[in-house]
Length: 231
Image (cartoon, rainbow, N blue to C red; front, top):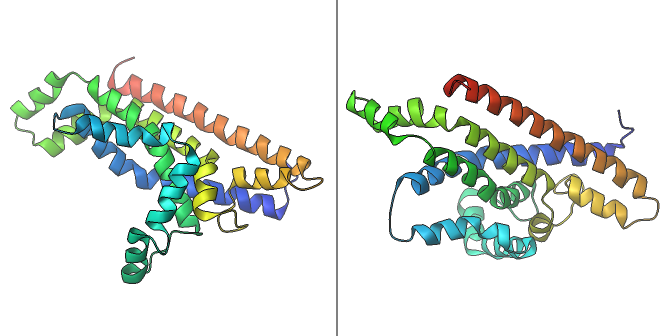
């Protein structure tokens, strides 16, 4: 379809890998926090909600810098993980996944929370009355009914991770084959003479991948709605 160079293929594969890992790792945490915000009242709830959505309003470079001073080799968290577990984030693809996960996390949590809030709690209460424990109620009632929001959150998080640039390049730089994603590769090609053609190819690839993800999400959401809501 596209006459892509080996370097361009590497950037595409790395972007898909980073976006997938970022989304899958963020999913269980995002699901738990979405349920907590939707179902519980506690002191500091507004503050937690604000902190979760902070990456949406902060400049991405600021988020990347905060990750660098926290998870870098000399940062408090980064030094601890490197010294005791051998885990290094700075200037690694894992760090790019972390940055993308942080940036996409609010877009994952928001639709899941809204879907859970829209569920009639009488259905959950009825299941509890019949003897179901909290875990079964969540897995058998809440989660299936929130599936459209879950799918939307996954796609939004994946799309954000796929296109993230500012936080990633600040935290892990732009290293070909290691941290150079599609966005970083496009930026690099636009800075060199004759690189416009390669940049254009990667732009088309990014559009195709994002559009395919949106179409798939819409189809899955419709299927989930027909199955669980009778739509």
